[in-house]
Image (tube, helix red, strand yellow):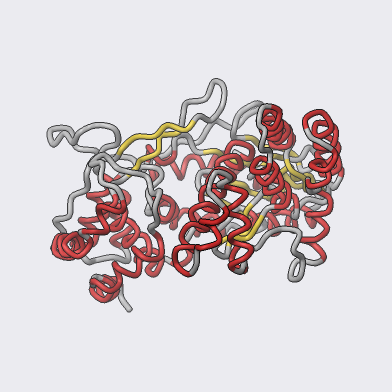
Length: 447
Protein backbone atom coordinates (compact mmCIF):
# COMPACT_ATOMS: atom_id res chain seq x y z
CA UNK A 1 0.00 0.00 0.00
CA UNK A 2 1.04 3.60 -0.58
CA UNK A 3 1.75 5.73 2.53
CA UNK A 4 -1.58 7.58 2.22
CA UNK A 5 -3.45 4.27 2.00
CA UNK A 6 -1.55 2.88 5.01
CA UNK A 7 -2.35 6.01 7.01
CA UNK A 8 -6.05 5.69 6.22
CA UNK A 9 -6.11 1.93 6.94
CA UNK A 10 -4.27 2.18 10.29
CA UNK A 11 -6.22 5.21 11.55
CA UNK A 12 -8.96 3.26 13.28
CA UNK A 13 -10.07 2.46 16.83
CA UNK A 14 -9.16 -1.24 16.61
CA UNK A 15 -5.55 -0.48 15.66
CA UNK A 16 -5.08 1.99 18.51
CA UNK A 17 -6.52 -0.53 20.96
CA UNK A 18 -4.07 -3.16 19.67
CA UNK A 19 -1.18 -0.73 20.17
CA UNK A 20 -2.33 0.12 23.68
CA UNK A 21 -2.76 -3.52 24.70
CA UNK A 22 0.62 -4.58 23.30
CA UNK A 23 2.90 -1.68 24.24
CA UNK A 24 1.43 -0.03 27.33
CA UNK A 25 1.68 -1.35 30.87
CA UNK A 26 1.54 -0.13 34.46
CA UNK A 27 4.64 1.78 35.43
CA UNK A 28 4.80 3.75 32.19
CA UNK A 29 6.49 7.13 32.68
CA UNK A 30 4.09 9.99 33.40
CA UNK A 31 4.14 13.08 31.19
CA UNK A 32 3.70 16.73 32.13
CA UNK A 33 -0.08 16.41 32.46
CA UNK A 34 0.37 14.01 35.40
CA UNK A 35 -2.12 11.48 33.98
CA UNK A 36 -1.32 7.89 34.96
CA UNK A 37 -1.95 4.90 32.74
CA UNK A 38 -4.85 3.65 34.86
CA UNK A 39 -6.63 7.03 34.59
CA UNK A 40 -6.06 7.16 30.84
CA UNK A 41 -7.29 3.59 30.43
CA UNK A 42 -10.55 4.43 32.21
CA UNK A 43 -11.22 7.10 29.57
CA UNK A 44 -9.64 5.32 26.63
CA UNK A 45 -12.70 5.39 24.36
CA UNK A 46 -13.05 9.17 24.53
CA UNK A 47 -9.25 9.60 24.29
CA UNK A 48 -9.12 7.55 21.08
CA UNK A 49 -12.04 9.60 19.71
CA UNK A 50 -9.91 12.73 20.15
CA UNK A 51 -6.88 11.04 18.57
CA UNK A 52 -8.81 9.79 15.53
CA UNK A 53 -10.39 13.17 14.90
CA UNK A 54 -7.27 15.30 15.33
CA UNK A 55 -4.71 12.96 13.76
CA UNK A 56 -7.06 12.38 10.82
CA UNK A 57 -7.38 16.11 10.23
CA UNK A 58 -3.68 16.84 10.85
CA UNK A 59 -4.50 19.15 13.79
CA UNK A 60 -3.17 16.97 16.64
CA UNK A 61 -0.94 18.94 19.02
CA UNK A 62 1.40 17.36 21.57
CA UNK A 63 1.77 18.47 25.17
CA UNK A 64 5.25 19.77 26.05
CA UNK A 65 7.47 16.81 26.92
CA UNK A 66 8.72 16.25 30.44
CA UNK A 67 12.50 16.38 30.66
CA UNK A 68 14.70 13.60 32.00
CA UNK A 69 18.48 13.91 32.08
CA UNK A 70 20.70 10.81 31.86
CA UNK A 71 24.29 11.20 33.01
CA UNK A 72 26.89 9.98 30.51
CA UNK A 73 29.94 10.21 32.74
CA UNK A 74 32.47 12.74 33.98
CA UNK A 75 33.03 15.82 31.79
CA UNK A 76 30.14 14.86 29.49
CA UNK A 77 26.88 16.73 29.02
CA UNK A 78 23.86 14.67 30.10
CA UNK A 79 21.56 13.20 27.48
CA UNK A 80 18.16 14.91 27.41
CA UNK A 81 15.27 12.45 27.18
CA UNK A 82 11.75 13.62 26.30
CA UNK A 83 8.82 11.98 28.11
CA UNK A 84 5.40 12.38 26.44
CA UNK A 85 1.98 12.12 28.05
CA UNK A 86 0.20 8.76 27.79
CA UNK A 87 -2.08 9.99 25.00
CA UNK A 88 0.85 11.48 23.08
CA UNK A 89 2.83 8.29 23.61
CA UNK A 90 -0.01 6.34 21.97
CA UNK A 91 0.00 8.67 18.95
CA UNK A 92 3.80 8.51 18.71
CA UNK A 93 3.74 4.70 18.76
CA UNK A 94 1.13 4.79 16.00
CA UNK A 95 3.45 7.03 13.96
CA UNK A 96 6.54 4.89 14.60
CA UNK A 97 4.77 1.69 13.51
CA UNK A 98 3.44 3.45 10.42
CA UNK A 99 6.89 4.79 9.53
CA UNK A 100 8.31 1.28 10.00
CA UNK A 101 5.86 0.00 7.39
CA UNK A 102 6.72 2.80 4.98
CA UNK A 103 10.50 2.62 5.61
CA UNK A 104 11.23 -1.01 6.62
CA UNK A 105 14.96 -0.61 5.88
CA UNK A 106 15.23 2.12 8.51
CA UNK A 107 13.91 0.23 11.51
CA UNK A 108 16.74 0.41 14.06
CA UNK A 109 18.66 -2.85 14.27
CA UNK A 110 20.67 -3.94 17.34
CA UNK A 111 24.40 -3.13 16.99
CA UNK A 112 25.17 -6.88 17.17
CA UNK A 113 23.82 -7.23 13.63
CA UNK A 114 26.53 -4.88 12.31
CA UNK A 115 29.37 -6.59 14.13
CA UNK A 116 29.60 -9.82 12.11
CA UNK A 117 29.73 -7.91 8.83
CA UNK A 118 32.35 -5.49 10.14
CA UNK A 119 34.50 -8.33 11.49
CA UNK A 120 34.19 -10.32 8.26
CA UNK A 121 35.19 -7.30 6.18
CA UNK A 122 37.99 -6.35 8.56
CA UNK A 123 39.46 -9.87 8.62
CA UNK A 124 39.51 -10.18 4.83
CA UNK A 125 41.29 -6.90 4.10
CA UNK A 126 45.00 -6.55 3.19
CA UNK A 127 47.52 -4.55 5.29
CA UNK A 128 47.06 -1.54 2.97
CA UNK A 129 43.60 -0.94 4.47
CA UNK A 130 42.45 1.83 6.80
CA UNK A 131 39.60 2.31 9.25
CA UNK A 132 37.76 5.63 9.07
CA UNK A 133 35.45 6.38 11.97
CA UNK A 134 33.33 9.53 11.89
CA UNK A 135 31.25 10.76 14.81
CA UNK A 136 28.51 13.32 14.20
CA UNK A 137 28.37 16.15 16.72
CA UNK A 138 25.04 16.51 18.56
CA UNK A 139 23.22 14.54 15.88
CA UNK A 140 19.63 14.49 17.17
CA UNK A 141 19.59 18.20 18.17
CA UNK A 142 21.07 19.15 14.75
CA UNK A 143 18.49 17.56 12.45
CA UNK A 144 17.02 20.33 10.28
CA UNK A 145 13.22 20.24 9.95
CA UNK A 146 13.12 21.71 6.43
CA UNK A 147 15.53 19.06 5.18
CA UNK A 148 13.64 16.35 7.07
CA UNK A 149 10.40 17.46 5.41
CA UNK A 150 12.06 17.34 1.99
CA UNK A 151 13.38 13.82 2.65
CA UNK A 152 10.02 12.53 3.94
CA UNK A 153 8.12 14.07 1.01
CA UNK A 154 10.04 11.82 -1.36
CA UNK A 155 7.77 9.02 -0.12
CA UNK A 156 5.01 10.60 1.96
CA UNK A 157 2.60 13.02 0.31
CA UNK A 158 -0.18 12.75 2.89
CA UNK A 159 -0.23 16.28 4.36
CA UNK A 160 -2.08 15.40 7.56
CA UNK A 161 0.38 12.63 8.40
CA UNK A 162 3.33 14.97 7.84
CA UNK A 163 1.62 17.64 9.95
CA UNK A 164 1.33 15.29 12.94
CA UNK A 165 4.94 14.11 12.59
CA UNK A 166 6.21 17.69 12.61
CA UNK A 167 3.90 18.63 15.46
CA UNK A 168 5.83 16.04 17.49
CA UNK A 169 9.20 17.46 16.38
CA UNK A 170 8.20 21.05 17.12
CA UNK A 171 7.05 20.29 20.68
CA UNK A 172 9.55 21.55 23.31
CA UNK A 173 10.99 19.52 26.18
CA UNK A 174 10.97 20.83 29.73
CA UNK A 175 9.30 24.15 28.92
CA UNK A 176 6.07 25.58 27.57
CA UNK A 177 5.51 26.14 23.87
CA UNK A 178 6.50 29.56 22.58
CA UNK A 179 4.71 30.27 19.31
CA UNK A 180 6.83 33.39 18.77
CA UNK A 181 9.97 31.24 18.75
CA UNK A 182 9.13 28.00 16.88
CA UNK A 183 11.46 25.00 16.97
CA UNK A 184 13.02 24.40 13.54
CA UNK A 185 15.83 21.95 14.31
CA UNK A 186 16.23 18.83 16.40
CA UNK A 187 14.52 15.50 17.01
CA UNK A 188 13.61 14.95 20.69
CA UNK A 189 15.37 11.86 22.05
CA UNK A 190 13.46 9.09 23.76
CA UNK A 191 10.34 9.18 21.59
CA UNK A 192 9.30 6.06 19.69
CA UNK A 193 9.76 7.98 16.40
CA UNK A 194 13.23 9.35 17.26
CA UNK A 195 15.45 6.56 15.94
CA UNK A 196 13.61 5.82 12.72
CA UNK A 197 13.44 9.52 11.80
CA UNK A 198 17.16 9.93 12.52
CA UNK A 199 17.84 7.02 10.17
CA UNK A 200 15.52 8.29 7.42
CA UNK A 201 17.25 11.70 7.58
CA UNK A 202 20.52 10.23 6.24
CA UNK A 203 18.93 7.70 3.86
CA UNK A 204 20.16 9.28 0.62
CA UNK A 205 23.64 9.86 2.03
CA UNK A 206 23.95 6.24 3.16
CA UNK A 207 23.02 4.97 -0.30
CA UNK A 208 25.54 7.30 -1.92
CA UNK A 209 28.36 6.15 0.37
CA UNK A 210 27.59 2.45 0.02
CA UNK A 211 27.95 2.80 -3.75
CA UNK A 212 31.62 3.83 -3.49
CA UNK A 213 33.75 1.00 -4.94
CA UNK A 214 36.39 -0.87 -2.91
CA UNK A 215 35.00 0.31 0.41
CA UNK A 216 32.47 -0.79 3.02
CA UNK A 217 30.29 1.78 4.80
CA UNK A 218 28.50 1.19 8.10
CA UNK A 219 26.39 3.61 10.16
CA UNK A 220 24.74 3.14 13.53
CA UNK A 221 22.77 6.29 14.42
CA UNK A 222 25.52 8.97 14.60
CA UNK A 223 28.54 6.65 14.37
CA UNK A 224 30.00 5.96 10.90
CA UNK A 225 32.68 3.42 10.03
CA UNK A 226 34.33 2.99 6.64
CA UNK A 227 36.78 0.21 5.77
CA UNK A 228 38.70 0.97 2.58
CA UNK A 229 42.15 1.06 1.02
CA UNK A 230 44.40 3.77 2.46
CA UNK A 231 43.94 6.23 -0.39
CA UNK A 232 40.14 5.89 -0.57
CA UNK A 233 39.78 6.17 3.21
CA UNK A 234 41.87 9.36 3.25
CA UNK A 235 39.72 10.88 0.50
CA UNK A 236 36.48 9.89 2.26
CA UNK A 237 37.73 11.41 5.53
CA UNK A 238 37.28 14.77 3.78
CA UNK A 239 34.38 14.02 1.43
CA UNK A 240 31.90 12.45 3.87
CA UNK A 241 32.03 15.31 6.44
CA UNK A 242 31.76 17.81 3.58
CA UNK A 243 28.72 16.02 2.13
CA UNK A 244 27.00 15.75 5.52
CA UNK A 245 27.55 19.45 6.15
CA UNK A 246 26.37 20.66 2.73
CA UNK A 247 23.42 18.30 2.26
CA UNK A 248 22.21 17.73 5.83
CA UNK A 249 23.66 20.64 7.87
CA UNK A 250 25.34 18.31 10.35
CA UNK A 251 28.94 18.48 11.51
CA UNK A 252 31.37 15.64 12.22
CA UNK A 253 34.08 15.84 14.83
CA UNK A 254 37.31 16.77 13.07
CA UNK A 255 39.38 13.76 12.03
CA UNK A 256 42.57 13.44 14.07
CA UNK A 257 44.42 11.72 16.91
CA UNK A 258 42.41 11.75 20.14
CA UNK A 259 39.24 12.83 18.35
CA UNK A 260 35.98 10.88 18.19
CA UNK A 261 36.59 10.89 14.42
CA UNK A 262 39.78 9.13 13.39
CA UNK A 263 41.63 7.59 10.44
CA UNK A 264 43.87 4.65 11.33
CA UNK A 265 45.73 1.87 9.50
CA UNK A 266 44.13 -1.55 9.99
CA UNK A 267 47.20 -2.73 11.93
CA UNK A 268 46.39 -0.26 14.74
CA UNK A 269 42.78 -1.32 15.10
CA UNK A 270 39.77 0.80 16.02
CA UNK A 271 36.98 1.03 18.61
CA UNK A 272 33.43 0.95 17.22
CA UNK A 273 30.04 0.13 18.80
CA UNK A 274 31.63 -1.11 22.00
CA UNK A 275 34.14 -3.37 20.22
CA UNK A 276 37.79 -3.24 19.26
CA UNK A 277 38.54 -4.41 15.70
CA UNK A 278 42.04 -5.11 14.40
CA UNK A 279 42.17 -7.27 11.28
CA UNK A 280 40.75 -10.64 12.35
CA UNK A 281 40.75 -9.67 16.06
CA UNK A 282 37.45 -8.66 17.65
CA UNK A 283 36.89 -8.08 21.36
CA UNK A 284 34.93 -5.85 23.72
CA UNK A 285 36.78 -2.52 23.82
CA UNK A 286 38.91 -1.78 26.88
CA UNK A 287 36.88 1.19 28.13
CA UNK A 288 33.64 -0.82 28.06
CA UNK A 289 35.34 -3.84 29.62
CA UNK A 290 36.74 -1.74 32.47
CA UNK A 291 33.34 -0.13 33.14
CA UNK A 292 31.84 -3.59 33.69
CA UNK A 293 33.93 -4.11 36.84
CA UNK A 294 32.58 -0.90 38.37
CA UNK A 295 29.03 -1.91 37.51
CA UNK A 296 29.45 -5.32 39.14
CA UNK A 297 31.08 -3.72 42.16
CA UNK A 298 27.90 -1.68 42.81
CA UNK A 299 25.96 -4.93 43.21
CA UNK A 300 28.56 -6.40 45.56
CA UNK A 301 28.43 -3.23 47.66
CA UNK A 302 24.66 -3.62 47.89
CA UNK A 303 25.02 -7.25 48.96
CA UNK A 304 27.32 -6.20 51.78
CA UNK A 305 24.55 -4.21 53.46
CA UNK A 306 21.49 -6.34 52.67
CA UNK A 307 20.17 -9.17 54.79
CA UNK A 308 18.15 -10.64 51.93
CA UNK A 309 20.65 -10.92 49.11
CA UNK A 310 18.40 -12.97 46.85
CA UNK A 311 17.26 -10.08 44.61
CA UNK A 312 20.83 -8.82 44.15
CA UNK A 313 22.16 -12.30 43.35
CA UNK A 314 19.34 -12.54 40.79
CA UNK A 315 20.41 -9.18 39.28
CA UNK A 316 24.04 -10.29 39.19
CA UNK A 317 23.14 -13.51 37.39
CA UNK A 318 21.06 -11.55 34.88
CA UNK A 319 24.12 -9.45 34.05
CA UNK A 320 26.24 -12.57 33.68
CA UNK A 321 23.98 -14.82 31.60
CA UNK A 322 21.72 -12.32 29.85
CA UNK A 323 18.19 -13.36 28.94
CA UNK A 324 15.50 -13.45 26.30
CA UNK A 325 12.46 -11.25 26.86
CA UNK A 326 9.72 -10.35 24.39
CA UNK A 327 11.73 -12.01 21.64
CA UNK A 328 14.89 -9.96 22.29
CA UNK A 329 18.34 -11.13 23.36
CA UNK A 330 19.36 -8.81 26.18
CA UNK A 331 22.55 -8.66 28.23
CA UNK A 332 26.28 -8.04 28.30
CA UNK A 333 27.07 -11.58 27.22
CA UNK A 334 25.57 -10.99 23.78
CA UNK A 335 28.32 -8.43 23.16
CA UNK A 336 30.93 -11.07 24.00
CA UNK A 337 29.37 -13.67 21.69
CA UNK A 338 30.89 -11.79 18.74
CA UNK A 339 34.28 -11.59 20.47
CA UNK A 340 37.10 -14.07 19.92
CA UNK A 341 38.85 -13.07 23.16
CA UNK A 342 37.55 -15.34 25.94
CA UNK A 343 40.32 -14.11 28.25
CA UNK A 344 38.14 -11.11 29.09
CA UNK A 345 35.39 -13.45 30.31
CA UNK A 346 37.83 -15.36 32.50
CA UNK A 347 38.95 -12.08 34.08
CA UNK A 348 35.35 -11.18 34.88
CA UNK A 349 34.71 -14.59 36.43
CA UNK A 350 37.86 -14.29 38.55
CA UNK A 351 36.80 -10.84 39.76
CA UNK A 352 33.31 -12.06 40.70
CA UNK A 353 34.70 -15.10 42.53
CA UNK A 354 37.14 -13.00 44.55
CA UNK A 355 34.56 -10.35 45.54
CA UNK A 356 31.86 -12.93 46.29
CA UNK A 357 34.07 -14.59 48.90
CA UNK A 358 34.22 -11.29 50.79
CA UNK A 359 30.47 -10.55 50.99
CA UNK A 360 28.65 -13.87 50.51
CA UNK A 361 28.31 -17.19 52.28
CA UNK A 362 29.70 -20.21 50.43
CA UNK A 363 26.22 -21.42 49.44
CA UNK A 364 25.41 -18.03 47.90
CA UNK A 365 28.74 -17.97 46.06
CA UNK A 366 27.78 -21.23 44.38
CA UNK A 367 24.52 -19.64 43.14
CA UNK A 368 26.44 -17.13 41.02
CA UNK A 369 26.73 -17.95 37.33
CA UNK A 370 29.87 -17.69 35.20
CA UNK A 371 30.48 -15.61 32.09
CA UNK A 372 32.56 -18.37 30.50
CA UNK A 373 29.78 -20.94 30.86
CA UNK A 374 27.14 -18.49 29.58
CA UNK A 375 29.37 -17.80 26.55
CA UNK A 376 29.77 -21.53 25.85
CA UNK A 377 26.05 -22.28 26.29
CA UNK A 378 24.93 -19.49 23.97
CA UNK A 379 27.49 -20.34 21.29
CA UNK A 380 27.13 -24.11 21.36
CA UNK A 381 23.80 -24.95 23.00
CA UNK A 382 21.67 -21.88 22.33
CA UNK A 383 18.46 -23.67 21.41
CA UNK A 384 18.30 -26.04 24.38
CA UNK A 385 20.18 -24.38 27.23
CA UNK A 386 18.39 -23.14 30.33
CA UNK A 387 21.51 -21.40 31.67
CA UNK A 388 20.20 -18.05 30.47
CA UNK A 389 16.48 -17.48 31.20
CA UNK A 390 14.03 -17.24 28.35
CA UNK A 391 11.29 -15.35 30.16
CA UNK A 392 8.95 -15.74 27.19
CA UNK A 393 8.72 -19.50 27.86
CA UNK A 394 8.24 -19.44 31.64
CA UNK A 395 5.29 -21.42 32.99
CA UNK A 396 3.10 -20.27 35.90
CA UNK A 397 5.29 -21.92 38.54
CA UNK A 398 8.44 -20.28 37.19
CA UNK A 399 6.71 -16.90 37.02
CA UNK A 400 5.63 -17.16 40.65
CA UNK A 401 9.17 -18.11 41.66
CA UNK A 402 10.62 -15.03 39.93
CA UNK A 403 8.03 -12.74 41.53
CA UNK A 404 8.84 -14.18 44.97
CA UNK A 405 12.53 -13.33 44.47
CA UNK A 406 11.99 -9.85 43.05
CA UNK A 407 9.22 -8.81 45.48
CA UNK A 408 10.40 -10.51 48.70
CA UNK A 409 7.92 -8.57 50.86
CA UNK A 410 4.93 -9.94 48.98
CA UNK A 411 3.46 -12.88 50.95
CA UNK A 412 3.88 -16.28 49.30
CA UNK A 413 0.19 -16.96 49.94
CA UNK A 414 -0.73 -13.99 47.72
CA UNK A 415 1.68 -15.03 44.98
CA UNK A 416 0.30 -18.57 44.97
CA UNK A 417 -3.20 -17.22 44.31
CA UNK A 418 -2.12 -15.32 41.19
CA UNK A 419 -3.34 -16.85 37.93
CA UNK A 420 -4.02 -15.88 34.34
CA UNK A 421 -3.75 -12.21 33.40
CA UNK A 422 -3.04 -11.10 36.98
CA UNK A 423 0.00 -13.38 37.16
CA UNK A 424 1.18 -12.46 33.66
CA UNK A 425 0.83 -8.72 34.29
CA UNK A 426 2.76 -8.75 37.57
CA UNK A 427 5.46 -11.02 36.13
CA UNK A 428 5.85 -8.75 33.10
CA UNK A 429 6.09 -5.65 35.30
CA UNK A 430 8.77 -7.27 37.47
CA UNK A 431 10.88 -8.43 34.55
CA UNK A 432 10.38 -5.21 32.57
CA UNK A 433 11.71 -3.20 35.51
CA UNK A 434 14.82 -5.38 35.74
CA UNK A 435 15.36 -5.29 31.98
CA UNK A 436 15.09 -1.50 32.04
CA UNK A 437 17.82 -1.34 34.70
CA UNK A 438 19.99 -3.79 32.76
CA UNK A 439 19.64 -1.81 29.53
CA UNK A 440 20.53 1.39 31.40
CA UNK A 441 23.68 -0.35 32.67
CA UNK A 442 24.48 -1.51 29.15
CA UNK A 443 24.10 2.04 27.84
CA UNK A 444 26.55 3.29 30.47
CA UNK A 445 29.03 0.49 29.78
CA UNK A 446 28.98 0.33 26.00
CA UNK A 447 28.30 3.96 25.01
